[in-house]
Length: 245
Image (cartoon, helix red, strand yellow):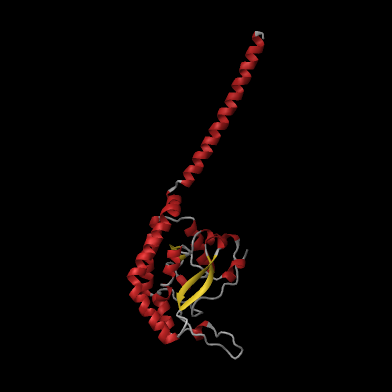
């Protein structure tokens, strides 16, 4: 091999080594970027802290509030009859269906055709009291304990709403539904569906330990002041019929 061939061969090796080094550096940067995302405070809290925290809080709340739940169950049985617990299917994380538990607040009154009467006619004064104090929500603590729900997250809505969401609104199902949420401390039932969904997606994008505890403390204030219990035009909340896609 002559001198010229040796030089050309060395140059070729150098160019190849440079390309390999560059490709390796790019892969390393990409890996670090991904690791940075995965190890961000939001990711760590959401994937390693939030669920154990929810389990401990719900278990503690069940133990502390068990006398209140027992008394509420007796009152529901006395005033509204059976069943004491209202059980309904709701979509959870990734739209997985689960059974949500609440104390009954309505009667089973029906019209002449056997159809249930409107909510405002079946919702009794006692039921309104349960809703205004959020006592009807206490059985959901067992949903949290099981892992169906979280303390904080978008509220679980009806299964029939699933086909009505646009892609942006559907993102609310990227996390577990919550006992309370960002929308519940920013108007509750007194705001529009679209506003609720905006708050839901905002929460999905900004989950953090600090935000969850801010929402928990604001929820206590909202319950004590009984803010946003009804929508103003309905005893509960109007039926969602879909938004612009």
